[in-house]
Length: 169
Image 1 (cartoon, rainbow, N blue to C red):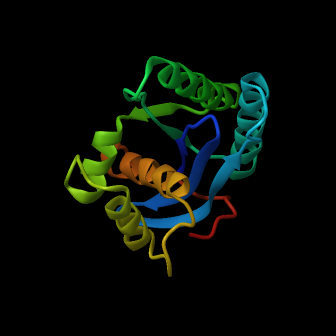
Image 2: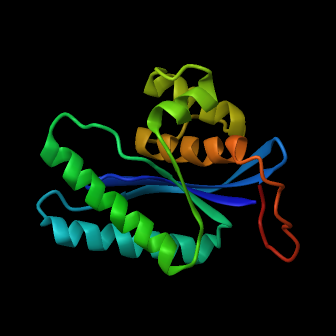
């Protein structure tokens, strides 16, 4: 099963594409979609949306796993985060990719066994579960990979056939 994990943000949106075969996981692609600091919100949302559409087209995921909304420090931050999340959800919907949503606490619990784990603990577990030589370059990327890994561990669905796919874990 190919899973696209997305950690939405209006300045930086993390993404991670993994392959799950039973309880074995492999990294396919990961990174961040950055937006210009001085760009208006509509332009930033467009960049996020178009970038995720392109990533989904390239990766052809079976499912997208997106971080659910959490309570930010203030209402405005929550609204902006919700709009970035909407851009990500739309990118998946336009490619007919099913979407699973996970709360940050659930992702942390799945990877570390502690719903209040630090970003460093999550990053360490992402590195370990994916067998990476070093941790992902940013916490946005490691969070996106963590969301994808959470879905792989929580979905309980049988692994989809990878026949005919040109993938290397």
